[in-house]
Image (cartoon, rainbow, N blue to C red; front, top):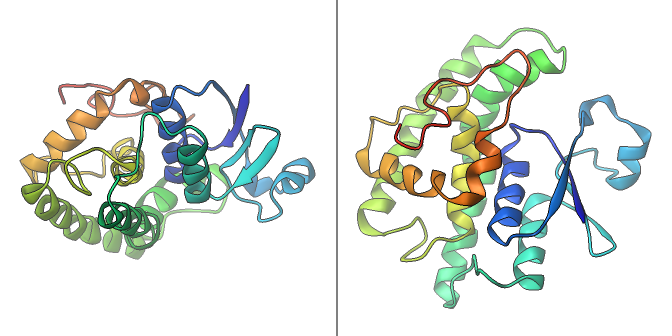
Length: 221
């Protein structure tokens, strides 16, 4: 069985978990306190980051290369479009969420509100929280623009881009930082992806000291 070293609210880990679940790959989850710099974990990934996946006799790190490995090794169900332009758009949006969205929103809301406390790094920086709360509105508007013209984020079929976006938004939804009433089309998209069997384990996550809101696991939120 595969083994994933992860942190429950890490969007990068959640993206890998969604891909594993969608492709029905059995995987044991091992929660890793990577900030403690455990020697055994650093041997698995000298970068000291999660996710790390043990599969097929290999140790894989970095979420997007992991997801693309899984896509190539286990191609069904496919999470990449068949067309060249579709694959480009999928990769562009994955990079958008894992880079731009992460730095402008996730790191300023989730990391300030949750990670600092869990890691014993003090209190949230109110300026960062304010900036993140402002930036997420811009990103939700961008998502709405995409979904006004497309069925899914990258086109007519669900792709890794949808999982990347949902991974970040689900982690932020755990701490009630997503205004789902801002755009009905974004809420409808999230409801579709949230209802997939691949999402069940993510909706069952619990982080000590941070209970999720009532609507978090509600499919009719």
